[in-house]
Image 1 (tube, rainbow, N blue to C red):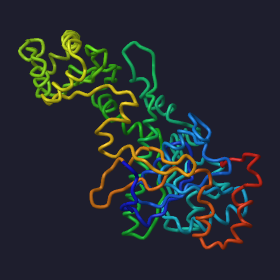
Image 2 (image 1 turned 180 degrees about the horizontal axis):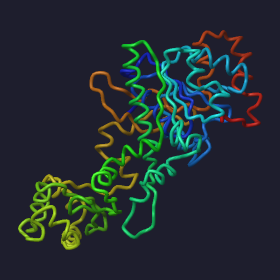
Image 3 (image 1 turned 45 degrees about the horizontal axis):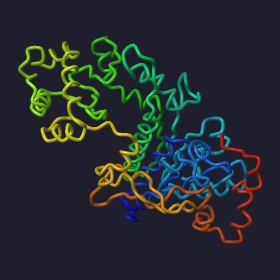
Image 4 (image 1 turned 135 degrees about the vertical axis):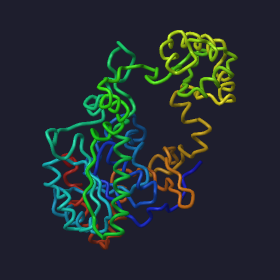
Length: 409
């Protein structure tokens, strides 16, 4: 499946992405997926994610993974020329997303009040690790630290086993979704009031929000949630089981209906066993139930087992490797892997748009930009003449200072 040129429901909205790494940039990407014109402003050294991880043809995977649907501009905001271009660009922006910390935020003129001088009704979204004020304000932080502070690491893994972080940058991704939701809400409110506003989101709040069930248990009963590995605290069976061919599957039964469906699929009489007749009893005897289920799974190869479980309407799925995910027929059908044309790498696959609007769908229209790829194009759109652009570029983009490698903040 290829990328398309569908304009999307946010066509006509301009977003300035002045953020690095994942949470802020991915929020801008999602807005771009939905049709916004996203302009990624980078320092002469570029987003830090351009310098990390696997590489091909000079492009790094962490940057390419989360920066589709953007035009790339280089501005050196430490210079007067860079600030002049930014001022003109900010006047055209509906939304600005940044995760630059103080004091660099104020020094570079990226704070809410400073941006409002250029665009009074701007929607300004600031992403921090722990909050813009309060006892942890100003601290540096990333996904890993938020997982520790908000209790996720303490719940991850098997009981009695070592503490392990969740390897997917789940906190960054959740934060990007909340930033996107906040921006959409603020844009709607602006359409009524005519006023912009400041939005603050942080990694800590995103994960506390996601910890609603565990914190709910604690706040309601005073009982902390224990680590349970692949089991559920609320029902059984639930776990990962090995099949006859050594391949693993996930099986879980949160209701009586699904447990009875499982029994039917495997020709098992567990539903009539006094130990397993209710959810509470199954939790009390989950060691015995897990052993019985594991034996049934080991008797069948994975494809045959899954066919029987799916046919019986059981909650079951394979434990896939990432290569399996990229080739999964449902993933491909959902257009979550699409092809786009990169400026230097040529045709390349990237992840697709995760929300599907039927009348005004979003799309992947642009590949992740090379550093400064669209600088001249955007300056021309802002009204700069060709000779002005030629004079501006060395100072405004920091080309004269690029070897020194000065980065924003």
